[in-house]
Image (cartoon, rainbow, N blue to C red; front, side):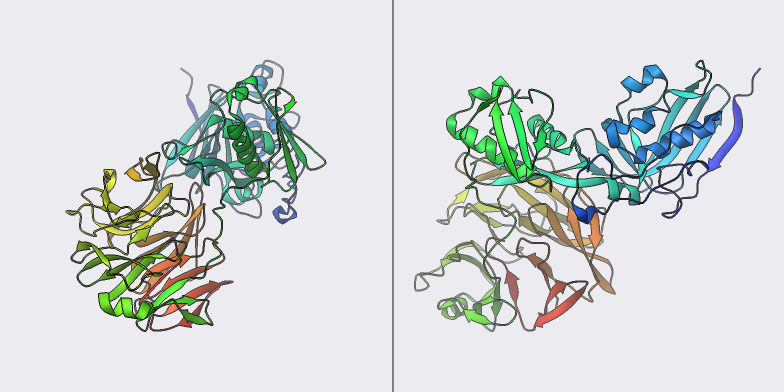
Length: 560
């Protein structure tokens, strides 16, 4: 009876200096090249590590380690990695189906039935649509391969459709991109983040992902102007002299003239993220369509100044100058306001007071404010881009309420926000997504979900949520820009940890603070503020928090 196991377990030491593959040390005869400078903004198939092909008289171990290492080189559709495969597997293997991001030290076991397994701990995975999924700590995957030497040399005869990379390698060869859809009113573009290797074929991957539609969690809140079933006619997007040429199949002919303009906007905004693309030409079955300039409302920045409630009045605030807004002092005194929210036009304003929440107009401060609800225990109110007012009780036993701009309550289903305590809620600038923190400060969850709206733009329910960050002690989250949220975390009582998290990507920590009440942003990641528990306002500049002002009761950007 054959021994089924050679008892060969290779513990691979991971280091960013001497190791560039997902789960194996580099073969001794392989050289590793320096990674590209991503700031150079080039997209090419020759800007990666350069793994070597199989050496002569390679052992099974050499083949497996070399194959894993070759996952660092996606050029020419992983041409080098395919040299480690049998002829039949070369054409069948699909490395783009899944990418595993390694976390920890993997174990390789070689068996004497010409097979091997790799047990690897992973922190995240990318699926074939480019969607990033952060995984719980301790998640493992068992990867199995088989070997064959019928050609006179060992090669891999079966392997799963995936590649594995350590985090430093992933950060070099992959990049986050947004593919763009519309909100249900087709007024705003909504980004859906995907991850692809930075290479010459990225333009094709981006348009193909756009044609395949939005991520599942987002699909009920957005739509595409591109008719279902539309495909690229040549299965590729060509980029020549900075011009991306996109030819769609005949299915796109069913779109109206207006929709064809929107199709151009979707594709243009998606492809202009590539540094090699300066303009985009969209055709249908090689026939041109009228080119139109983009007139859609952007979601990346807001040109308005932040507003603060300080010294009994509302002020426009830029860190240096403060200008009182209208005759807000009299209105605040009349209500006894302690917090506020306003729309982007700075006209509709909602105040929180000790006896309820009030709706008023900053351009008509002499009018009697309308009390929307009585009582206390509410989160700061929110006025979304369509003018709807969100009033969120902290207590799980109370219902979330939504009002229109005239102060009339509308029907709204809380879905997963029903029956849970709420610590924070923020609506994205285009109104299609929310981020909420639920639970308590010792056991909380940060979740992002689609806002499902009626044809008139009224919010009516929420989609199935996703969890974009691994923390159980967050107490506040807000939208930083169209693809990122800011999170305040309190892992202990000694400090507050701010995070910036990409929806569909990674998180990065900012310098800690001794306390924090809320985080706000202008819509740009470079402009992030935190108001602490003592009314002191800080702005993140470079790598540090700068103190701007004291004695602030509340601080918000219009429309946030």
